[in-house]
Length: 420
Image 1 (cartoon, helix red, strand yellow):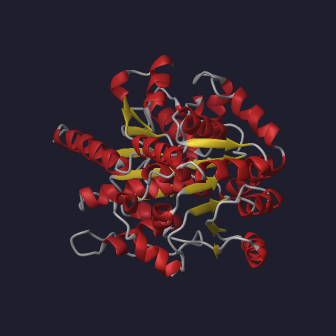
Image 2 (cartoon, helix red, strand yellow):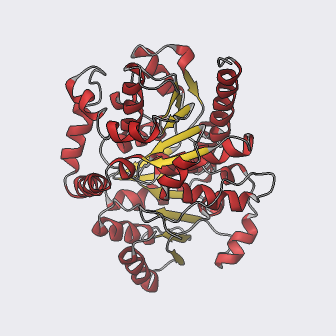
């Protein structure tokens, strides 16, 4: 059954007491696709995300999953914010974002840097904080949630503005999904920030945010990244032997030509290895990877969209990718070093710098760099082991649980002290 916005309707809000974790995960996946049903449930906790890159929504789902597991009585909603307030605008903005990062990266870099430290009270920030605000407020004003968590900066700004105007009395939390601080995340009406690492906490403090409002939780990922993996069974299922495994996840924003260049560069690595290619939902990428597989010197496994990245990362020795916040975090949680190829200017540049600075990643600026960096690391197991150790130290696989527990405690305090 489909909802009015085209998504499958969420018929009920199941309890962990009578539902498997797998069933709960399916239900969490449906929530952002049927806003009407989610709002009709009069949620206690609402998580706001957006589909600019997949990371904001994946983080929102991870948080929502642990909130429900921690307290089955909590009613939860997850909204795809821009899709909810203005689907046409959402489609336009997503297209503009994809075109800019693919074909005009210098323009996106300029926008990101020019807005990185704008004042929360600036005209530009006021405009961003007003996008969709009236529609959003009308949808929740009669029975607002008690807690709103934003994994997308504009949504956090909207909630902050409504709080400052006296329209909402909610706990307003921000979960940053990259390893850099940008002004669009910082708002006066935020009750707490959950960040990926100590560097971000220090930057927020330097910008005047009070220390008691910042928690170094890590960036939230799927709870399966906390679980052990039977690596031998995964390798057997994929037909992979005991040798080194390279995992390539190019992301939907990597131009197709560059995608092919990376595939060629990985196959040029002299050291024996197997490459796993996750092509995602784009058939042209999968077809291109299949073309390279048929002529590759080294074994190559080509996959489309997968739901077992936690297993693939567990058997890999090295990840070749851009530096999206969630992909980077998932790799850190698995102790998987990265070779980072041409990250998106702005937030992904900052993520790449974070990994390199802490010894968990290497940058590759050209096709030849990809080949050379991989060959160097496969030829130096001690260095690869040291990078894996640094990655594990940076990873916070329990981040969603930490956030869910903090939100649950705040919600309990709020309900305990509510007027009778």
